[in-house]
Image (tube, rainbow, N blue to C red):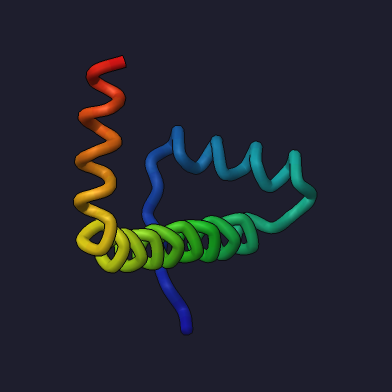
Length: 72
């Protein structure tokens, strides 16, 4: 799928520098950036889901530990 990407001069310079430093095309640098961002987003969603299940289950214990920590 074709796409037009509009960058500021500064962003284009940075992209040029990254591409040259890594020996990759600008297109590949952008594809990798999207893939990395998507992976981070997926991990964040998985963490939020896990915490959503664990926190209610351990709320009492966490509250008691918080009190014990405050008394130390």
